[in-house]
Image 1 (spheres, one colour):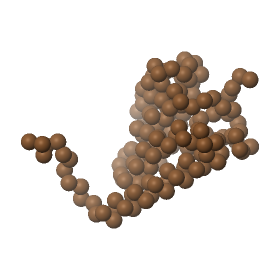
Image 2 (cartoon, helix red, strand yellow):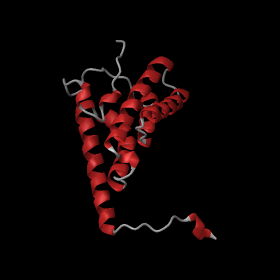
Image 3 (cartoon, helix red, strand yellow):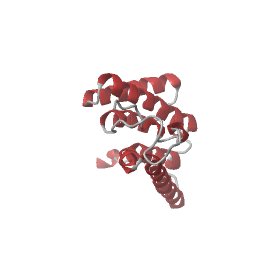
Image 4 (cartoon, helix red, strand yellow):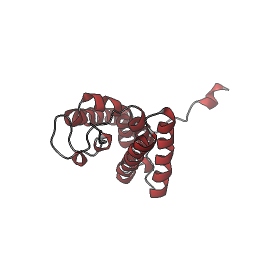
Length: 159
């Protein structure tokens, strides 16, 4: 009776599991380190969830439709734009974060670049990330669009 609740056995070898685990760990470590260097550790800590989920898809299910380059970059681009616009227009509330995730999903479906971790990014941008300057990072004078995964966390402040 309980055996129906368990998934079917997978047909991959433990060497593939190890390769995926090492790739995922190194990919997340590099992405979070890079974001931390450019934008500060506070921002990088908020992005570790979406980046980790993307790394799992990229390294463990790399042949799947959700782990293709267009899905990853297009999904993050959609989520970033929607998340920042919703935060700017509607404010930083739980309802706004949920709305941003839903709107990002609609845009990703329309552009055929569905990437589930990007929905989490849209909600994270609205709910958790403090607004910062759009042009420079805390430690860098480079334009923010030069770092793919981290460019989306910038929004002008009114100071």
